[in-house]
Every structure is written in structure tokens, then in C-alpha cells.
Image (cartoon, rainbow over all chains, first blue to last red; front, side, top):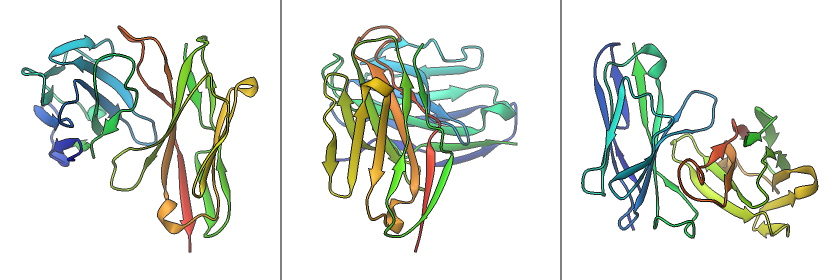
Length: 116
Length: 118
């Protein structure tokens, strides 16, 4: 079974440029997460989707960040415009089901963003 | 508020040594889950174990073992006879058992970087 797929793996951009990250979760997983991981830190949740609905976006900086999961499968996270402080690894994770019964989250390899 | 503390930023051992990674958590919830994840240099977080707050039994899986103690709010992870392939960053995480809104999300510690030298 394929795991969580993310692209690109690496992205280098100049500040004020836009950038987008793509995630394809494990087949059949209804819940999808986007995390940001700063250097030397643990991942921090940006947004959680259940199917196509964003059920928790309280930590998403909405002035410059946006996300979508139109058909409840793959998802895109966008930053426009990027700032130097956005340099981080952006991780996508998925979980089976939308109830509390399925617990484990499975993570993709992440996209390492460098903003110059 | 929920919080996970991994006080050890980096640990370096020589192959075949035993090593324990500490994790202390804070939560007001009486029911919750604790997790350990491994993050090798490739970047992907790999799930290792999940424990719920009702189950304080220690667990052993091969060279890995976990010691969960509610009395001290700790969930420590021991690798016996460490190997070079164990080199990675290890994260402890906490999740409450509720669901809805911001509940049910993982709260991660800052991680412990383990280097195992041959």
C-alpha cells in the first residue's frame, strides 16, 4: 500500500513569491493534516480536514496561507506571499476514518521550503 | 493546556549501548493517548507506539521498550543494544481522547536527536 505522497520534496524561493505544496493521502483515509515543522522543533498543526471540510484551521495564518481539499482526497497548501520565517518542513499526514476510533496518523516525507 | 517536554535535545551513544529517551507530558484530561514517532534523516515521521491513559503496562517490541508512569506523567522510551540505524530524531506526542474542533490533535515535543556511532 502506498504511503502519503508529497511534492515537491524541496523548494527554494525568494521572499514575496507564492508557493504551493501538494499531498496525496493514503487511499481511503478521510482525515488529512498539514503540519509545519521548524528547525529543531516538533511538528505543529496548521489545518485538519475531514473529507473536504476544514474542521480545524485555528493555527493557519490566514492572511497568507490557504489550503484546499476539493474532492476530499488530495490537498494543496499555498503560501502567498512567502516570508523568510516560512522556511520550514511542511508535513502532510492522514488517518483512516473521521471518528476518534482510528488513532494513528501516517506522515509523508514532507516538503522542505527555503525562503531567501 | 497540553504540553510535551523532551528535555534531552541530543544524545550520542556508541553502538550496543542502551539508551533511554525521556518524555514528560502535561494534560488536564483524564483520558488521553501518548505516542512515539521516529524521524530519520529522510524526514518522514514513522509511528512507533501508541498507549492510552488506561493502560500503564510497559511494552517491549524487540530492542524497543516503553515505560509509562502516570504518577510522574512520563512515557520514556528505551532502546537496548543500540544500532547505527537507530540514529534519528525521536518525538513524543500527546492526544486527548475527545474529538471535534481542536481536540484530538497531536501535540509534539521538540524531539531528541539520537546519534549512534559505530
